[in-house]
Image (tube, rainbow, N blue to C red; front, top):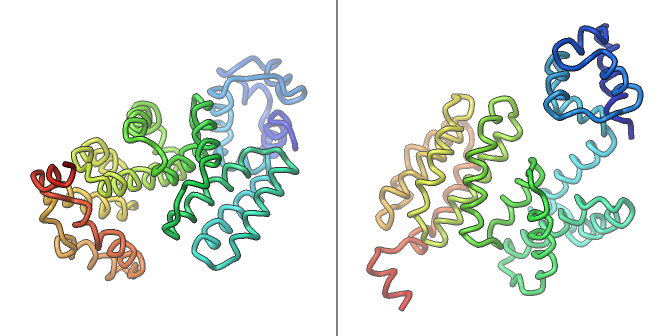
Length: 295
């Protein structure tokens, strides 16, 4: 794998930019030269500023830095979805992830195995009792990482069901304060955040914790301000109605939203939403009814 300095040097020379131009106002010319030739350390802020000056996205930089690994992991993500939807053999996929972890010692592959095993169990309505080690591996990894990236957020988002509500709320608060401001410049992060918020709302619904909706709904609304993220806004409307109507909620309440999806050609998406919310009334109780059930 090439070094960061080598990639920056290659990008700079490909654009016919001088060391002096690229370094100006960021660091000394000599410091940039050392970074390119010896891969000396620089702060992430300086690296992002250098990329911005060259009009290079972070994703483009990462592709150049880890081309082979990047492509391979993108394929893993694609296979993950296909196997989970039973288009491929799950045993072969699990063995592939374990084998890649053994060869590379890259925690990515083992954590993906853990995530897949948990999601598959939930999808098949199987017990998680035999997956205690996998659950512990995910929790232990996330607790060790101080500053989460997209990978950590994705793992957490898809395995919310193994975490306590209090822990989820702590993460939500951390993300609200530190991450949301970067979403306008990182479309992939915006997408991952949306699915995280959506998964939180679904989990809160199933646990009859609609009182927590006000924590998440404003975050979904903020993401959906851009008209190009229409689905985000439709999702916000749907869960806002669940929160407002609570035990009186029914699919008829969101007929307009589902009709819009059908009209725009997203019929399957509409069906997925219907399937997810068909039994929502079984998770939402009147306050007095809930108290009786808990006694």
